[in-house]
Image (cartoon, rainbow, N blue to C red; front, side):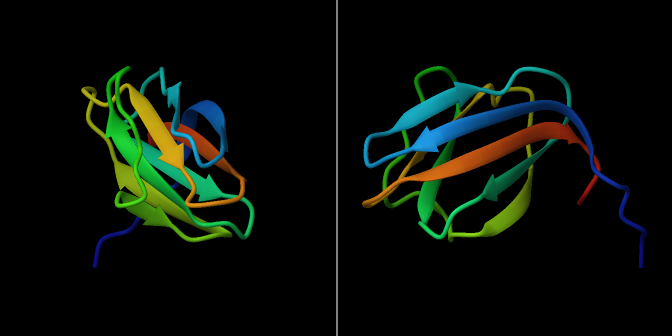
Length: 98
């Protein structure tokens, strides 16, 4: 079993998520993104470039959860949406943690 390197953030971002897709540029270095949905409202996430849009059929982030996602340099933006209600999605781009 291999050891997991601790996560070292290189940039921190936030999206106020509503039922309309929103996106944020995730600039900086790092091959991993830590996503934290900080309220009890589920949101849905998409990864891509400056034109990425999230839909409610995308990657689900249940409320009050966090996940580490491997990220290539081609991913420059994260988009998020809720089915209803609002939440906040905190994003850190960095290395390690997976």
